[in-house]
Image (cartoon, rainbow, N blue to C red; front, side):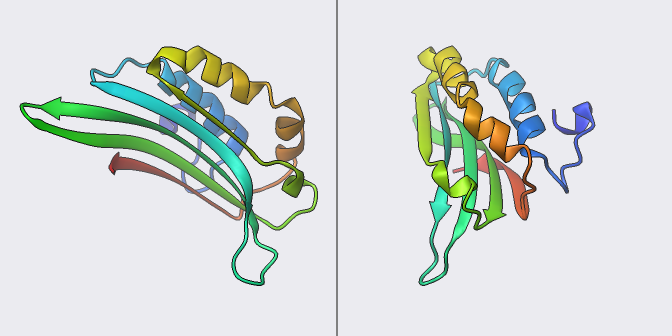
Length: 131
């Protein structure tokens, strides 16, 4: 979906990736159950100041006969340490029955979105596969 919208997957933009991810959440998946997670905050590495991260994922459990496994679409963004970004530290998590509430809660972080849009991630990735 990212490539279909013209987003360069080698240089992801958080805001636009989130917009496409929300569209992906509306695509039905035939699964036993699913969940959603959006989190951001400061990761500290030893004595280093750390780095600011944003992570969101859709995970779903598939069943075939007596075997169950998890699949996921995982998006990660890492920014260098920044005093402005370090004020943000939140997690939003939901199951499939609360998908709309999940999206609303993430989008309601107005100050976060108004701030993060002026920063460029040092690293970004999208992972699709088994957990």
